Length: 84
Image (cartoon, rainbow, N blue to C red; front, side, top):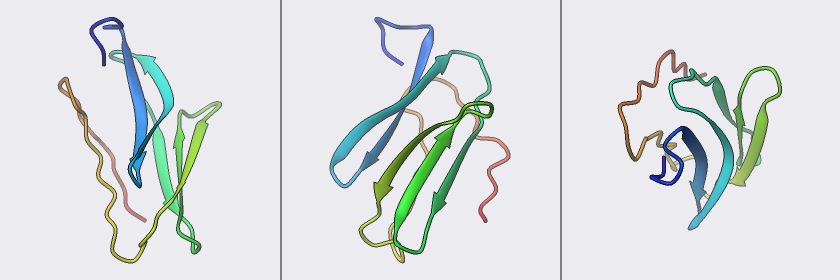
């Protein structure tokens, strides 16, 4: 969230020293997302249910790197997170 846009939440992927805006949504709306890492170490993030917006990144060390989900501001609940 940014002060200039208090009604929006922005979703970024931060990886390998880069930050990439993937999607944005209205504050207060539940957002569905999924994460997947394939055998080649490509992380795919899909945000939204009907027409998901996707972003990808190469995970340099998929055997040991961690995925960290966080919110920089606000009171956010990450619910129904199911590792698979």
